Length: 206
Image (tube, rainbow, N blue to C red):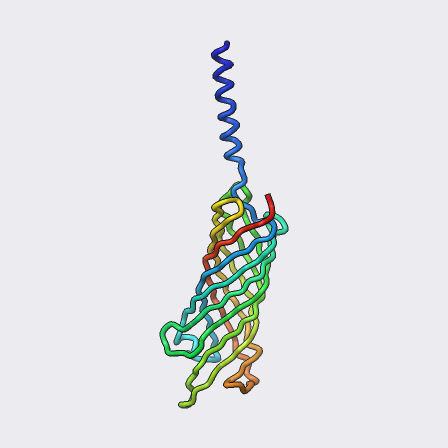
């Protein structure tokens, strides 16, 4: 009997420890979070014929801040800046976007991998200098807005610190178009594709 009691006394704590480990929180998407992004972007427009094809891909950095109301629903604000100074001898060629959106997270706190989907609205600013037209050089400055949809996947290193991959597609138009300081009435269409890897930290939740 004493032997049996000793065995039970040794085994039960081990079972309890294993159960606690299985049920421990591995991820959290609640509360304030801040993140740093590194990514790529591509823009296109039927209006500009092949201008968007000269430098099909830009690269840059971004910041994100958000707030998770619970483990499912989250709001975020994001800023991204991408340079397209890759192949050609541009003086300036950059695209910046800033926007807000909402996100739906899947999975639960017992999982390290947490996928999500998102929708957002963004303001876009594009500068291309110089652009050659009829043997003349011009500076293009355009501003507009897009509606975007996307998704991503977070991997939590700790319950608050995570690495993530994100991809979005946006559609809209430029509402302001200046050519070397002269405003034009044209309103070109705009399509955006963006992808990023990020690291972020949640300050709230469990």
